[in-house]
Image 1 (cartoon, rainbow, N blue to C red):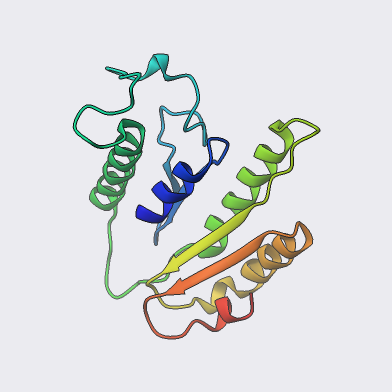
Image 2 (cartoon, rainbow, N blue to C red; image 1 turned 45 degrees about the vertical axis):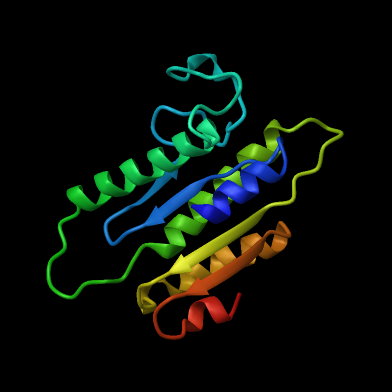
Length: 165
């Protein structure tokens, strides 16, 4: 969340999307179900108790609300999951495809004189899934074709799939 907050705070035009890849689904954590996708600095009028100065307790309120949305979505995802046995493979290829679709949609919404530099950060704590190899490689090739960088932070053992990116 610190990395996302830093990214959003660096430039007013920066956008952020956080997607969770779980064993049963991949889901947007931020923006949440009620927010406009990536419109962090959008119309603040619809935010509850909007404070135009941006701070009431020393924290930037929009960053705090983004963090709260992410935490609530993670809690919701974890409470609805039904994990049986040792099945720990996540739907990483689907999450990356969802990220590419989001980037494509954001590229269509920008003005002609603007350029968007997109990047995907994968934080991975699960094992690789051999069943996802073809889907994963298709997503990687699509990202390369669109000049989208994919960074990876692998928390578990080495990931052969992510090393190929």
